[in-house]
Image (cartoon, rainbow, N blue to C red; front, side, top):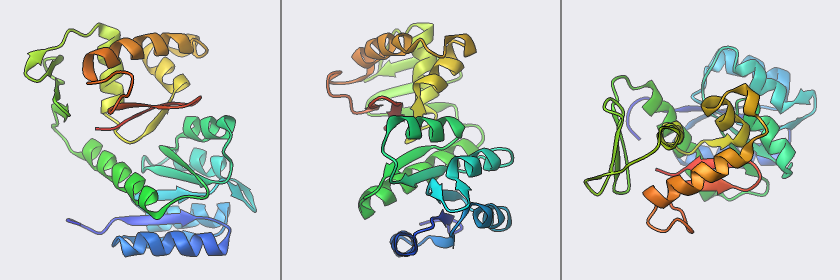
Length: 230
């Protein structure tokens, strides 16, 4: 790990889970703080200024979604929700509130660490000024020229396909809901038109994926949205 040690705040009311999560993250070399409720989490987030938040939704003094809403008024740090709520409605509510990823309990240490690494990389990448290209697999996006090529050969993308690709590729590892994509690309009047996304996503995958039926880069989060794997 290069540079300053990333600081992670864990907000979880169950003491044993909080201890396990803290141990997993500390073994990876992170500086970890924790809180057992919403109000304590708000105080720790404001005072510690963490680089990433791992958050349970079912807190004794409130809903974790409220903490996400509060955090987003002053911070853009990644938020990974770690919750026993596995229904699509809870996931979408948390992600639409500003969470970046969602892990359902029980979880594996390897997956948690992978999600944390992905979010820290994404946040660092967004903070870096002057980035003009995005590369993944054999695809290269030139953001200045608005040019995309695969294996050195230019790819013809429609304007919507290009915006869809750059919106996803600019946030690798983040789960982006259908509603967030619709609002970003088509505007707030199309919040229910999820078929727009499905049609254009299918066409985009045919152009950037080796096997569109088994995508490696634009992954589906069933019933929720998509995640870009760079």
